[in-house]
Length: 283
Image 1 (cartoon, rainbow, N blue to C red):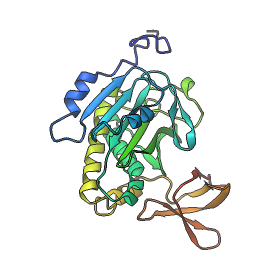
Image 2: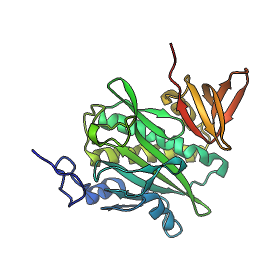
Image 3: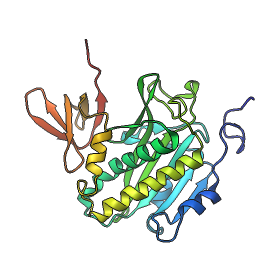
Image 4: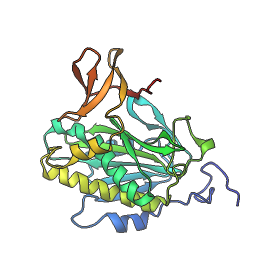
């Protein structure tokens, strides 16, 4: 079988069928549930930007999924692009009635939910790179297969974007350090199944967190993230705002979701923002 690349029609790549929006809505948009609407568009610049622009008129629980993103964004304004229907590209609107100082946990919560949902549905072990990356193992090497971006949307809303490489092949990877569920030998790459698993897991974790008033310990979020975090126990380099660089061992998450780094001088510093690099051990 041969398949063509690009977005020339919904079946231009026979290995990448389109999502079934009707079936997804039937499974996920339920009375009393978190998800209140689910729309699938063929292509857009950024699902985060689109959903944020409508945050004032939409209730909590709106989900927007794109078969292709042309201007997807990651943290630090990095671009995120992939062939049409090769992954899951979605954003959700949340309006958490918890203290705003707890909202920094939302990207970490999304990571835990996505890793657990995908782990069950795809049969792949995923780990978390603080603060917003999903990692898989490809040939014994850590590769990034997903990223998360949370942005404020109006006075009471947060839009969380999630991008996951599902069927990207080796010759399609944007950088050598990228991966996909396919390359990690997933037992399923059916995107409908994977999307249902991710959104159900996210609804469960979010519901528990909100019920606990956003408390990461009482909701079990802090323990779950710590257990699944590949950054902890590693030597890291943090490129911080103001061109400052911090190196040391990542030893814990504090109550605000910040990464605690033990520095060379014997002290510790909590990192709340910055670019984290896992430093390879030298022989």
